[in-house]
Length: 440
Image 1: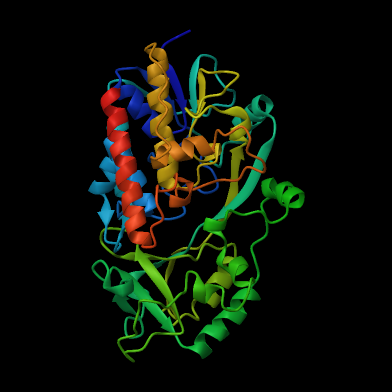
Image 2: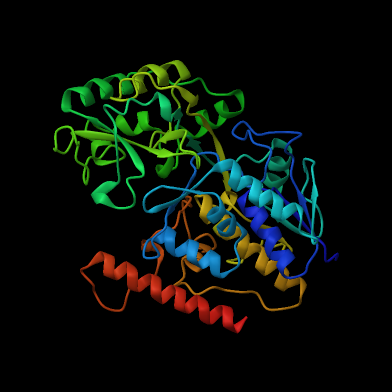
């Protein structure tokens, strides 16, 4: 069996996997079909392209996302290294300039002596040492090949939020602030009174959705409207009840309208898309509405009456395998140990989760080639808990999972203060990770 590894897909997971192999001195071929061929959601030529959002979630170590990102840093993540270089202001979150981030990752991957980039589409699973990290929009040919190997496929749908220009936002109505004064007032807030909200709500729930693409129709017909909760289209979420948005993405808590010094009835927040602050995305406004409907309905939001949309929201198919029936916690197949999967296809949901799975798959592939024992991270770590979640063979009705404190083992004693509890859980997990790294 050849020691050279084939990594398929140069998204976050694939780049992290290749990076880990290179760090171990192992040569790999990284296959990427862009720029010759793009998926319906991808537009940029570079690697590690972010599609739905430019946010890599909360940065506080005592949060689930912050804890996972710190684990990734300690494991030598190229994603975290490049995210710092491309960071844009986003309060307590880590958000990046998408193009700068992609360019930074691409440069490091292309300039590494152990990584050979091959720009072509892979339609069949190769023999030998392979890591498949083609993401939720795997091309049809390879998806068919994976389907033959893995059997049952599961489908859900994901949505992306629209982006508007800063100069088109009416800052006489909108204002800069972060909830409870956290961060540096990084969000633009569009406040609504009750009448404005009700008018917006009624138009939103009655707006016309975009027609499905041909390749999606059979899956909708088969599974119904099946979508990951974290990326629920705003119009679908709204139909759950008139106040659903006010207790969700439009919640006004922690904010006061400087014009009235009162808390608004509802608030739409926008977050910077790039370092220059020239573009902002509507936070929580993933949508599948027709473009004309998005312009009409979202222009009812105070401050966005004349908004210039640089990108409208889109919806696309996501695909993941039934990992608990197929994979070990190292992300390789039980029936074919030299074949690893990484990224959202495994059922880890989210950018950083996908990248982290790539780190773990690459690390374990390297150890397998070197004749070393596989790594099992402690379940007290966020990555360890995720790897165990996607590989537990007793799991029924498997669904994607993002990082959250609920998948970690409980603290030994009951702690009423949630912030303190999360802080202790994070400290425990990071200490356990350090011990594991020292042993390696």
